[in-house]
Image 1 (cartoon, rainbow, N blue to C red):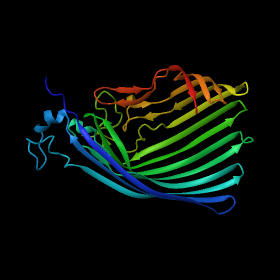
Image 2 (image 1 turned 120 degrees about the vertical axis):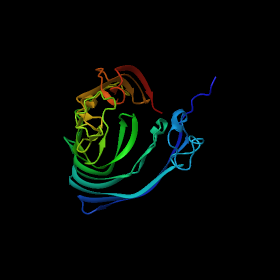
Image 3 (image 1 turned 120 degrees about the horizontal axis):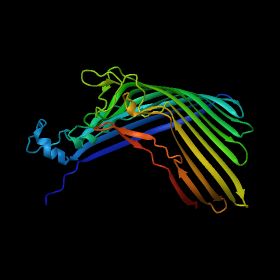
Image 4 (image 1 turned 90 degrees about the vertical axis):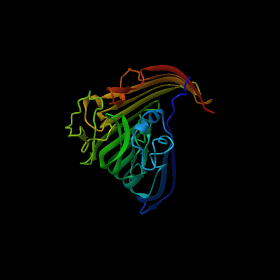
Amino acid sequence: MGNPPQNTIIKHTNDAWALFGQGSYDVSDQFTLSAGLRYTDDKRDFRVLQYGQLWLDIGPEFQPPVGCTPVDYPPFCDPLDEKIDVSADKVSWDVTADYAINDSSNIYARVASGFRAQSIQGRDVAFLEYPTVADPETIISYELGYKADLVDDRLRLNASVFYYNVNDMQLSIIGGATNSNQVINADKGTATGFELDLQWLINDNFMATFGAAYNDTEIKDDGLSVVPCGSTLCEAWQWRDENGQVSIDGNPFPRTPKTNYSLTLRYGTPVGDDGEFFVFTDWVYYGKIQMALYYTPEFETNNQFEGGLKVGYRNTRNNWEVALFGRNITDEDNVKGYVDFSNNTGFVNEPAIWGIEGTYNF
């Protein structure tokens, strides 16, 4: 009986530390200015400790790196030159101006910067490929909003509009003809939209919440292209160049819904002096989502929704609860992800699930 196949073993470490602070100043009884500052230092290392069986079986057929011979390559001579070592540091900040219109409402404006450290993707080491590294990305965002407690404090309203710009935006290329997983940088990414949420205590027994959001996103990099549809079984609506690639300049962010809505309803009625019977339902709806970096109808979803239900009894004195619950109660088939390699494969949500749960808090 021979030895079992050898696994790929890697070591990926991340060390980060930060200093931050925030302060506020009341310019007047109605007007407040707030500001924050943060310094972040991030270091990431990647090293292959052992090459998998595929390297052992096929690797010697490849040209070894300088300083290595076919005898010791692999796994004893590291084609990655021992280690990938990347680091970055950045100062980020935010400034907020808040104006109280009256005791129950205010408007605000906020400008903020952000930082995301470099990323290393090493999955492809198991498939005779080298890791990829994406440079750090930075973001600056602008937000204008309104907050209010209305209808004798029974209705809470939060609304905002926003715009943000990402420089050196990190993206993942997944699949393609080689079923690879690589990280890349796009020159820029922009988003414009709004968010709205309501909390309404209709009466002492009935509570409703509602949320809505709109996102208009765009990748901006006229020199960035990817290989679409590694399976060759999807349409890939975009024009392909001589290398079979399509530009993703002007495309929306992947896996970002254009619109989404949420709704919850809760009704509760007292039972005795220390109990409550309640009914709760929650629903979510997603508009158009382009899952891939490129356009193709097979990997685009629209009008997906899912709902839940919970009916139970809660004892407020002794902190326990028992309830009948259901998830995806209408048994929707919603696509959550995809694979464009070899075949058109989609990952779907869980089917309808019903059950009984008990909870005790102590």
